[in-house]
Length: 154
Image (cartoon, rainbow, N blue to C red; front, side, top):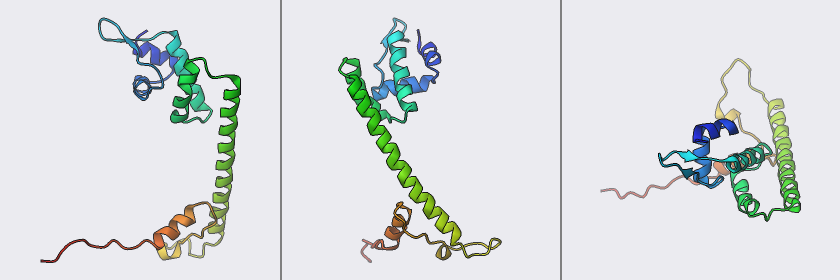
């Protein structure tokens, strides 16, 4: 099958196919005498694996690290289980951070003192640091040293 048929079979765009090839997620297709790419059933299975892993939250970098072992037959159930457990732990940590951020948003919302119909200035809209990282970014900005000029006056 050509690239268009392959993309349709995998429910992706031809640009996605080319991108995955360029990133090494799927092997480069063999070329026909006319220069067109030629894909087979194994290529369909590989791309579907990539898309399925993405749907489970795996990044392309994480998938790329798995692919050589999978293709070489060196990826056992224990490896799959470990990858899934690691991903669940990442999700748990992300959820923990999101809960902290939500509390920070709720606190900020509850502490609003400006009038709803009036514009707000930056001095009135300072967030506190509750551990989510948003407040810490604001603190870092506040203590940032001003840029110094490195010009000589003539």
